[in-house]
Image 1 (cartoon, rainbow, N blue to C red):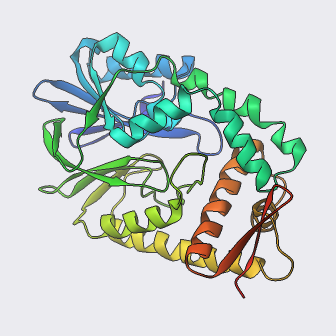
Image 2 (image 1 turned 120 degrees about the horizontal axis):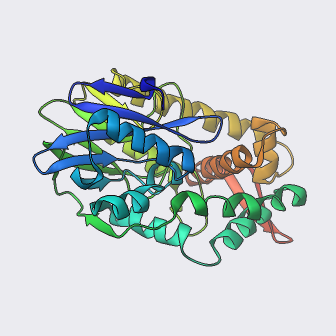
Image 3 (image 1 turned 180 degrees about the vertical axis):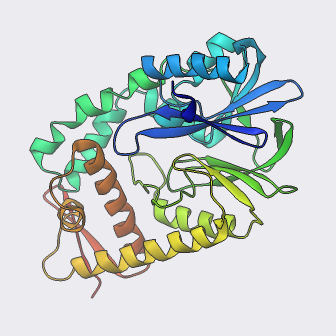
Length: 325
């Protein structure tokens, strides 16, 4: 691993772990505390990332047995994936929220989750040739999250100490159920995972058995996060940044603009979410990005309906959307 993949920000080390295009890498963080090191979001499992961690440990002067804890912001493979592998090597506890733990169990262990996802996208109009791509695509994530870790639960509202600092967990939804950011009030530092990202908008996903109003949850979470006195944010993707409160306002504005755009696309004949998605994002996306785009489209249509700006109807096992009368 090139040494440029490790960057130190005072006592916090950022280690970049490889992941699929278009993001290409995800941020992991190493923090030293009284009882050893804490690793935050170790990245997706791959042979490349296992080697990257071996090289990072050598460069940072860390032996695996010095890892005291592994803290996860959420259950997505690019953050959660290597937690079990690292736990086996270190014996460290793995910490995440209860809701995130439930989502991980449902997503990576329960039979039928992939089938439920295909059924959801089918009723929202995804073309059959694209639906046929989903089973292999979804199955590909399993190798990124095995072995599964033994998880300890971060209790709602209770501070947690790791890396020599006392953090207040802030739970927000929309991007992932039970997503936690970790805020140190005394320094203004926040480890914000994918809740707030610089330059890009986190995906907001409507999925089977998940949050019935993910965009509403995300917007509420942004407002809560924006009230914190943050001096420096350490995100899951891209570089650490300042101007955290302003970034939350930018993301709020982005989604209001997206809601307006999608409402305009609902005029005329009723449309499926897939038709709205293709109109909004184009029809040349790969299956991974298409899945994100359709899930985000559904999330915005659900929010438009909740605001009385869209109407939903079922016909011949398909769901259609139209502008409210």
